[in-house]
Length: 145
Image 1 (tube, rainbow, N blue to C red):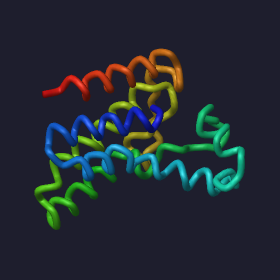
Image 2 (image 1 turned 120 degrees about the horizontal axis):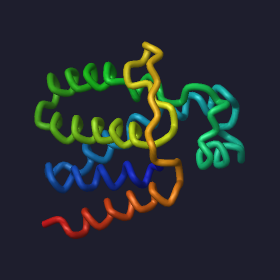
Image 3 (image 1 turned 60 degrees about the horizontal axis):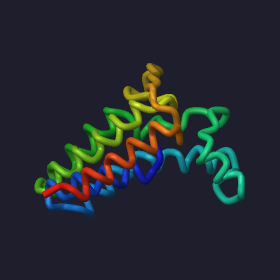
Image 4 (image 1 turned 90 degrees about the horizontal axis):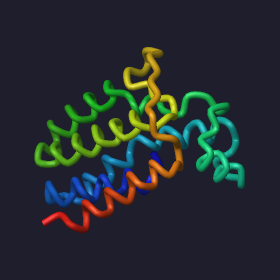
């Protein structure tokens, strides 16, 4: 999914839990592993980055691995629970929501990385369906009590 969709998820969870910063960070955090792949393929600091981001080039290899893993979610949640237990709910909801949204789109996801099980969803990247999904999230946020 595109980052604005993950951001809207963070806003919704932030409104529900009362902790916007943690919810937004958790809903965006897993996509940091894209940056490593962009750096490794020398597109991070040039104009190819935007083509790569907006067309989800699969030829760059596995972009959703370490941080898109359920194992990483569990480890980070345990660490956070130990040090900041009041942040655990917005963090877990944001992170799980991010993984669920990525599970829905057609780009490959490895939810059990380092195991090579891959999955693809049914919503096309930057498709009308994804933009409609984003619009629904915006509506949910603005009409929530």
